[in-house]
Image (cartoon, rainbow, N blue to C red):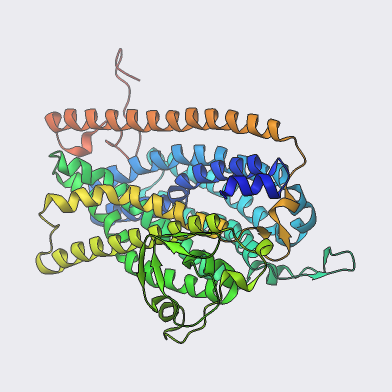
Length: 480
């Protein structure tokens, strides 16, 4: 039975469209999250280099990245606000019952959004109006506010995975809320750092991929080299770190959410010497077809020994665990995330080896082709991580305390399907507008670069001739 058929047969009619609407908006929003979290850090890093070394290319890059940062932040506010409303509109059962326990995370995220918007405005406004280091230091809190926003949303999500910080009264409602315990749940630390490192890596590879594409097209000046090297170096350094952080969160899931771990690893019965499946499909009877079976590896990865006992899906009744289809989805998402992460480690090692041996970028065009694809692959890995987290937790919206079907709205299913259709259209238009704006910015910058190459050094480009200082007087009859 497919996941959709299961939901239609075992839940209220509005459950499927509510889940599809939430999944679509979350999957769309998360594309922007790496840039909201990590692009301020990369921009300030480039700005710092420009000021320390008097580097005109770095200054131009920082200024252009700050413009991109502002555009994507504006769109991210829209998609993030939609998600915030959906929690209350689609899942009133959860928010009504548990909002007092874990709602603090959403409050923190809202304040972080507010502060980040103010700081971005100050940073953009200050380019032509503030002293160089004053402008830089006013931008330094930006990465901290971005991390604060991630703190809030990850606190809420980790609580849903390992709920703590409350007791239940005689009616089953939470009471005696301990906010500290509700925020710092067992899964918070592993989830937060795994998420933050993933955001920095993804933003680094995406930004570097833009300049890798330019490099492949023959734009091999210092500007493109610097635009590639700084973000790619940050991402490459953190990629092996993410491998260790990812192993830590997988081990935390093994101990704190054993049924989710069983779904992600296609473990049907509790046993030792459990094999590892690379991809493959689980059937309702627990058998697995396709994929690559590696004997005993799952037990070794979980507890460093073939004798490690791994909890299976049948350890709980069928109503308290993911279906075979949901387990397969979580498993494929998890495996794809691991495969992408492993390939990125190899790419980072290639880069590191060439830099260590020759203090230069790899000469092979295949490296730059891979680097150009790394950004898109990182975004896919981020999507896969959230799929694993959310699908592997089914059928719970609050793990072991509330099912998704108990939290869903009573709004008619046809109204929800219509809303989904409207949201899809709006989001297509929104992201099309974002892409159009970014492409127009790129075209304008490229045109400025070509004219600057003819007229003089890069410091004379229209948007950067006096990044710190008074604007030039407009000539009579000249452009504004």
